[in-house]
Length: 238
Image (tube, rainbow, N blue to C red; front, side, top):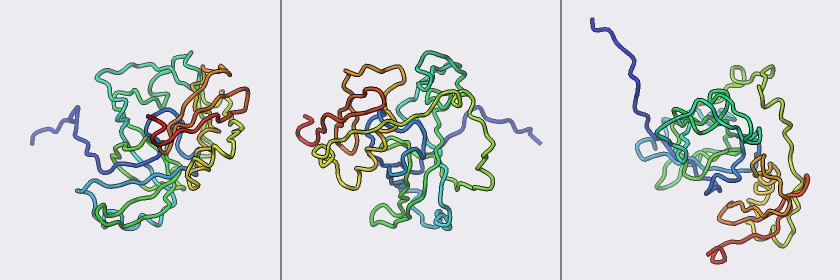
């Protein structure tokens, strides 16, 4: 009998794509589940639009998404990276981080399953919340989250335990907030509260811009307060 050897490479198929309000990376939460109000829709590729493949999924409250860092594919990889959480000033081993710049640009996220909808033309669609993915991100696999096996309250967080995780107070003037669709206001405030800036940027006079739901939300940060100064949408963005 011929001895089997493991292949160094194997093909991975894109089974679906997720649609979110993030057209760019800036502002995407650093981890999944930090902003529960964020909504995303997982639309399957034609080959996988079989309702039987989702039979029983509605019984689970949360799902694991295995996905591709499609905007971070590189031909080479580095054994060390500079995590933004550490201000970009310290290096860590790539396998001790969740950096997108990996030998295989694969991400892992837990999302809450909101609903399963059958839609004409696209078949079954998974509506999820808490996703930390850009619009159009390829989904490679979906697995149910199992609390009895996946939840580990005693787990430690390595170097991330040494960095205080804080949220900002968001000052979003009502006239500007009204330029955001009502159903997306809680989500955008939650995203801003997570402080989208890199840890090494702290200039109170600098104006930042976050693209969310086809709006450019421009803001400044001083101390623990983020102030929205402008919301631009539609033709005004041209």
